[in-house]
Length: 307
Image (cartoon, rainbow, N blue to C red; front, side, top):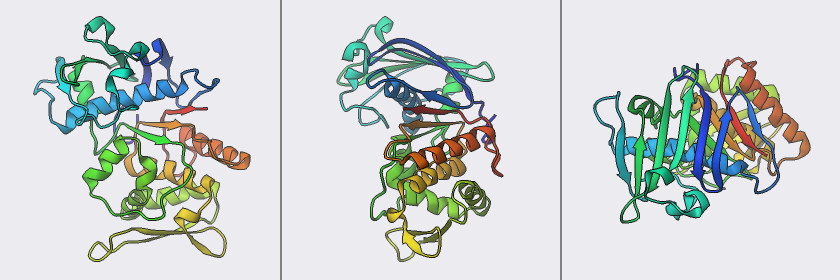
C-alpha cells in the first residue's frame, strides 16, 4: 500500500494499442523493460500513461456518475484529453487505425493488489472525438485524482530550462499529467520546500546518492515571476540548470516521489544521457525507492522503466 492509501498496480493487460495486439504484464515492486529498438517498450509505457490520463481527463470535466458500482460511457474531445503520445488520436488504435466497433477498441485492464480491477476501452467517436467506456467507476475515480496522482510519468531528462515561471497548482498538475515533468521541476521543488517534513525526507534520500548536496530555493510570490534554485555539492553554489544530468535525474525522480507519494512511477529511458557512473547511481536510487531503505520509507512503488 502506498502512503496515499491506494494499492499498487499488480498487473495490466493491453489490447490493440498502436503496435501491440495483446500484451499482459504482471508487476513487481521494480520492473525494467529491456529490448531492442522498436520492440514495444515505450509503447507499453505510453499505453499505461495514456489510460491513466483518460481517467484524469474524465475527472477534470466531472463526467463521473454519482454511483460507483456501475460503468461509464462517455466521449472526450482532443482538447479535453490531458495526454496523448501523438496528435492524431485515431492513430493510437492497433495498426494505426482506431475504429468504432467495440471489438476493435483499445482496451487496457488495470488490476490492483487488492484484487479490484478497471477496464478502460477507447474507440473512435464522431467529430474527431473518442468514445470511452470504464468498467468499474469506483476504481476509475480513485485512479483519476489529479491532486494525489496515482502515477507520475517521468521522461528521460537531458536538462532543464534556463528559467521557469511560477505556475498555479492547476497548471502544474495538468503539466505533470501530460508527462512534461522536466519543464516544471522548479515548481515541484518549491512546493516540496514549503512542506518541511517532505523536504527533509527528500534531502535525506538524495544525500544517500550525493552526500552533502544542498539546495537554495528562492521565490517571493509578492514580487517574483521566476523561481530561483541553486545547488551546492562541494564548496560552491551553481544554478540548477548548470547541474549534471545525474543530479537532475535523481532530483526529478525523488522530488516527484516525495511531493505526491504516487503508487507508481513510470520512467521512460531514465538512463539516457547519463554517464555509466551516473547510471549506477540511478540504479541505486531505484533500489532505494523499491526497498524503502531511505528514511522516507517509500514502500511498494512499482517503477516501470524502458531501456
